[in-house]
Amino acid sequence: MPANKQASTDGYKPDPRFKIAHKEALIGVGLAIFNFIWWFGFAYGLGSRPPEEYTYIFGLPDWFFYSCVIGFILMCALVIFITKFVLKEVPLDADPIDFNETIEEESQKS
Image (cartoon, rainbow, N blue to C red; front, top):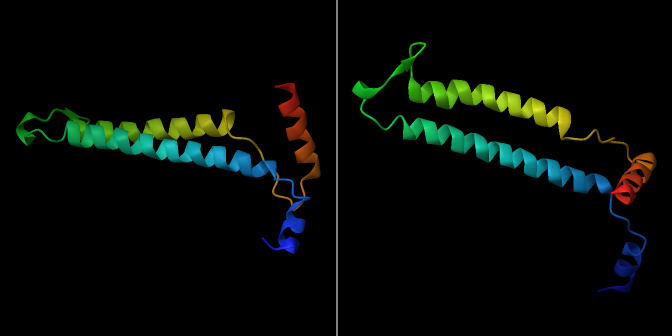
């Protein structure tokens, strides 16, 4: 490793916003996976029957109603809940000095 490259990383302090962003990205991926499993389970689980055996809810086949209509409502509710109570407000300034101090204070309290 060149000496000048090592010298430039000595004073490096990782930005705590990246840790928060990675956690929130994993939450988003988890929601997408949950949505796919919900949709796939109802669409192919109930939808694999012969059409003569379908039951209908509000004029829609039950597999479609549960996978698309209820799934959409459930995902909207989950996203709203997670946005309000789990995700954090993160400043996008170039140098968030106050934010870094707040994160350090919160981590010392825990």
